[in-house]
Amino acid sequence: MPKAHKVDSIHAWVVAIVSLVLTAVASGIYYLVGIAIVPRADELGIPVKSASLPYGLAMLGMGVGGIAMGWFADRRGPFIPAIVGTLAIVVGSYWVSFTSDFNVILISYAVLLGGLGNGALVTPLFANAARWFEARRGLATAVVGSGNALGGAVWPPIFNLWVADHGFSFTYELFALIALVTMLPLCFVLRASSPDQKLIKSHVVRHESENDNLTFSPQMLVILLCIAVVGCCTAMSMPLVHLPNYMAVKGFSLSDGALLLAILMATSMVARICWGFVCDYLGGLRTLFLTSSIQALGLVGIAFSDGFVALYGVAILFGLGFGGILPCYPVILREHLSPERLGFRVGLIVLFGAIGMGLGPEIAGRMFAELGTYFPGFATGFLVNVLNLIIIGTIILFGVRESKPPAFA
View (tube, rainbow, N blue to C red):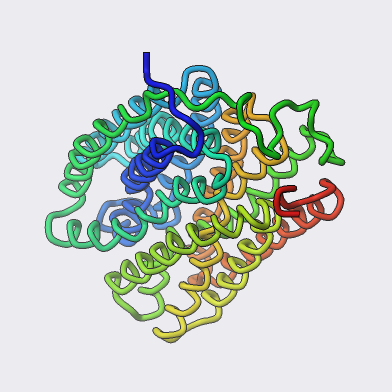
């Protein structure tokens, strides 16, 4: 039987760091779309307006798969889902490497790389992190949630070099090999059982009936968060997929775009850790409102900027905001609801976030294909980001009696 460990222990941080590395490596499949597919759609024989579709299908698959894997992890822990996710990432990437059929690429992204791959990693690992920590739950969740940002800081320049020097197939093959040798051994760290939530003596809710902080019902809170996450993720995903091509449209090189995306993601990774400290102090709801507001301002800046220096500045601003958004959702669920269905509820949030992440690139990409400019797409992203702010503001004002942890009230 796996050894039991205590909450906030050294092993808890080992679990958090391992989860970070797993999600960082797995996130490479998304950046391959922005580097290897979208800018080279013509030479791959792919319609330009459909080039970002693999990203959207992978996101949707991750959301659907995350619900099932989150439900499973609630009962059996994250170890088996992590193994499944790792093998799916490896097989899916290798499958893409030797096909020229776009339909096969779409199936691989939707089922293997999305549903069985990232779907088996993101949701279970997010929920697992929230169970391992008490005093630094916000920080720990931010660390785990930094996987996508870390991947974005590392992968785009590497992928751009590989594709330029060796081609599409070689890039996917090498990524599959790297995923296998790095991810599979790390999965075994996740075999340890998480601490017993009944023994945690903190302000967080242990049973639904104990919560006297909500004025909305638990079901209403989850519904509103699911709608809200569509708004912030739709806006979030537009630059993550289209920024290299957007830079090319502005007259810069794809290498410049890949580097800018890497800088944006590196900024978001550092910001995510900083926001984790803020989240432990302000609580998930207030931190989410702040970070979503900064993201909206950054997206406006990207849409209106033309110069090289200006684009770097607003991309960094965008990264500062979006970096703190996603880890807030598991923290909000853990602060205001019981841990008994945490994996399932995180899975719901991930599903609706994935819908937004899939919609964003499609909206921006199709508007660009029709109109020849990214401005209308980015403007749409800003509007749905405002919808997110309205919902979160409503929850803060009317849905809870206190939006920050009582320990800091």
